[in-house]
Image (cartoon, rainbow, N blue to C red):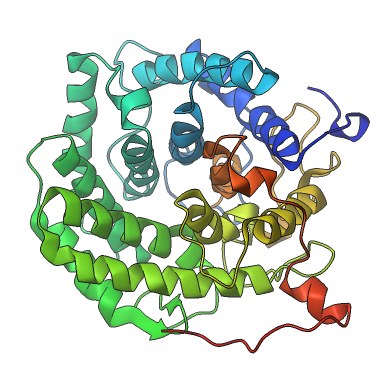
Length: 390
């Protein structure tokens, strides 16, 4: 793997593409050959609980796919990025085959525990985001293998917290795929998310509020996706809920932008801090869907996020010598790792790169560099009053 400290990048997009390709290519190249389990190093939390360690490979695959689907949906071209996407698309389609092939040594761990429900939810979210590129090309037999596993996982009763979104997003995909689905799973998640909204863009992760980033990792992106899809494919009666949830995510996106310090740091709080850039998934999703609130501009958001990317990845400290992500937030920090975390868990960080689905010609990438809110404030520039709208 190349040392990124020795490479010059002409644009913010080039830097993002290089980091994402560097991050995911070792996983996909190995899994496409059926040797992921043989080659991939796994490190587990020092307080790892008794769950099956095979869940690590599903974590690698499911969490990574959630970003790859939209990026790989861009048309092919002869740029370096285009060639990288083409290679990744080929690897990804073969990896999708191996994941459910009973004869593959990389058949993933699908059943027997709660944990696969989480990572399969991210996988189905990827199929929603990139249906034409990743789901449609699969053979009928392989699609059926996935559907059968999705339906069995949805029979699991999840904990009453953000986990309710996992069967909900899986059932939403089944609806889009024309399969039988359980409306109750979606209805339960909708009712609880409405009950757990605490205001100012924040959801409680269950009955009791905790100051962490699970509104980023799970709730906002999956809830908005579910409601939008239900309004389109099931009944327009979900449209008011979708519009309300979108406004909440916009409010939360404003907060996330303000949490980026002038030099690209952000607060490390709550559990699952090793998910790194996944903190900004709602903000990037808003940019991707061209739904940024009026107070945020493309150049401003891109500049802020790029500052975080560079603080995190402009160096070798967050990669192992073999090119895989380290256990930690900023370098190897094993003592900050939660009991359910392993190397595969870390690849949820890729969700911070969702804006790469926007083509290079989009204003998100072409807008001039602009200071973000905290830069303006701490340089003495004037800004408007922070007015929340929901």
